[in-house]
Length: 216
Image (tube, rainbow, N blue to C red; front, side, top):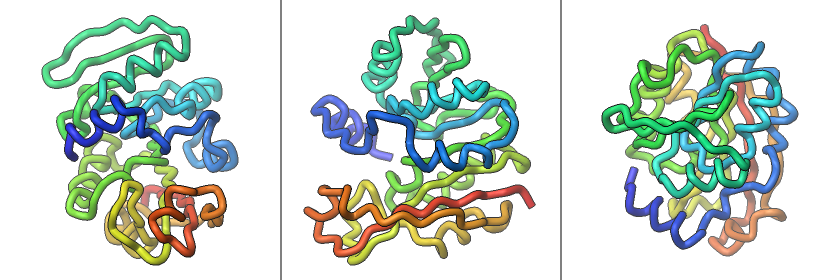
């Protein structure tokens, strides 16, 4: 990932990916994540999905590169987190909500603890193709072999390659995760009408795909 790119996006408030409510796919399919446990949310931004997960009884660990995003999250939630530095990772904690402010590839299993599930709405689609294999391997390292994954991707035509968000097809999901997890498509939703950024990029069709990735 390019830290400068993401820091510039946050500082200029080019954060169209942020939603002012919990993601509807998560609300419909949170059962994939299982009983209350520790849910890992990579590239979390300041997503309202995290407090929603906490409201379901989960402990939530978000990983976010940009300090401004983490600070905005706790400020907007009216929380004052405890902070400490652990090597290349700065930890923010308030109740059931933890943020690890760091490059995801600098985070270790010791930082996140025992993960029961992973929720990825905006991480895989934020990464250009050369980074995705390493990302999938890092998720496997952090989550272990037994944690289910609730994954949201974007498919669209024409694919201009100019994300984020990037197009990630089902075949690539299988290539990245299929060796360790079985992959079940859950939902396909046409999102072009609600995606002016994609229309401006010339997309004629855009859908969000939701997958349950279950341990084999």
